[in-house]
Length: 218
Image (tube, rainbow, N blue to C red; front, top):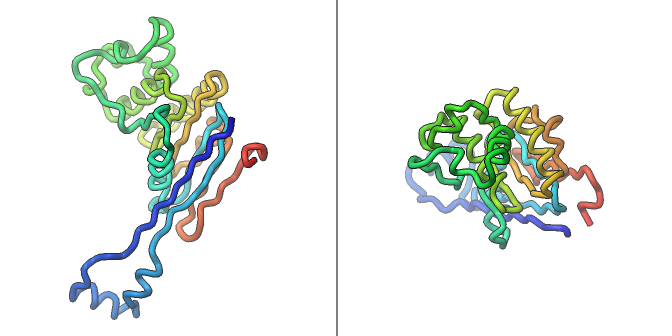
């Protein structure tokens, strides 16, 4: 079964024409009409199959996060989860926040890079920022959701840990047929994550979509 993700977001210029704004426009030879015509448009369509991974990348400020959030918001399904939206409880331990049996829970936490027993027994709210991110990854993996979205994928982690998590997620996607849709400025994880679709957001122009398997475009 093929799933289509779509993004379409336009940022029009509708700000007050103050004296300072007028002075800047005059200095750079701009008109209001030209500003309005130069509105930023983020549009992209991606087709994926179960178990595939989508990776959005490009320079900082190019609009990766906008595309990712638009993919999520426009996708009319309850079978989705956005990692940043996962709450961080302060009244129970990480191990009690992950669905599954004892060994399954420990494996899920380990796949997300949480292997320290003190982290596992701590509450998610009391973890460091990097540990909180890894907890959210584990929570999403353990959930029943098919489509998992994450911005700044592993950006705040050391690169060795990020590579290990990427490798684990590749295996999880193949085994569970879950779909992962990630965005990050980093491209050093491609060899471990092995995404099926790469979306390159350029600073100027449209998003470039590259499919590993041409059948995904059908």
